[in-house]
Length: 490
Image 1 (tube, helix red, strand yellow):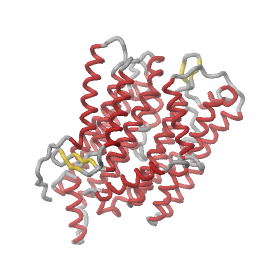
Image 2: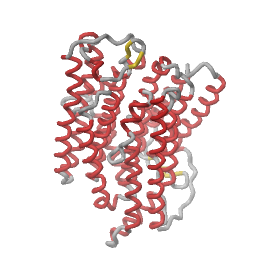
Image 3: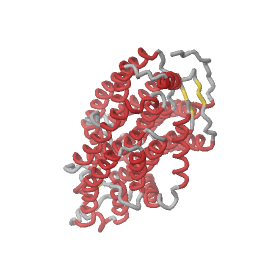
């Protein structure tokens, strides 16, 4: 394929990434000069930067632009997913503040690493080549490896960081091998050039080269690891349990959005002509993830491990929309991601309120009789559990509804049926938590009061989850425009 094209170094399309990068450098210098004072004042600065960059994206145009030698693309799809990622990262930092102080790990590196991870994720969703894809992915991954082991004096945290690093390196190797195969059989790394070449092949009735198909399989495997999808999920429960809870909340939200968004771009743009070839991979991953997430979480007693398996299942639901391979499917996935981030961060806010005698507890049994001692916390957590289970009229129901409808419209009725059945099975362990809170004998009350950041995130996400049915318009319209941009961007 011909890859000749003028090199464009226009940085206007990458202005959000430039601001994040420069802010990270400022944070690094200030933190080094304030050594010994921890992250005091730096976390609010990082939150402000993330929200300002999100506002910049919302306030700017969304005209598709390809720059940086063709390796970087900005369009409506990138704008939508970047805003979700940046807001999720900002909320994760709000959650972390009190935890870091209580655990005496209040160091300036934490907000710095979150900021650079967010930068990597923004680069991922704007990747227009496999080179840019890998650079963004590794920038995000390296930051999260360190975050997972942030409590370096704690064995669990160090073990979590090491496990994630070793298995993540293996996944990166698979991804690189797949990229090299695609390049070897097509002669280009750029997504737009691949899409144009494959379109010509499709018009001429030429089949996809077997080498490129094998390369795509390896790329999909590497991306499945980052999404924590079956069969590349093995790291998730141990890392979620061992990592500091605010890091787990961050990992369960923003990076998962970035990984799914990147997978959407890779499969729908350069390989959009070969939907039938990759759909079988996506269907398998989706079904396996939904089934494992539904059944493996039933016997869990640790809340963080339960959320790990829950997250695996929700990735499976999101991939139903991708399997449809249509604009409606992409629209459903984007709505699902927004709702999933709100439900997940709200749940982790409640988990981080589980503090007794100055020690954070994570066992589901510790919630016994919570409704009698802390009714507002019990109410918020019940809202999130009902929503994660997909019970109407909460937001989680609509997230699943849109992806199931897309699957039915695309003729994938069996896939939608499996999704409904696994949702019913998964509802058991969500409702079990509600039962523990409202019907079991009360235990010792949790410590209080909780930090302002925790209360804001828990209350805000709970209100969003309940009120989504009343004002869905702005989110639905934005997701529809983003899906249309992904389907039309060359």
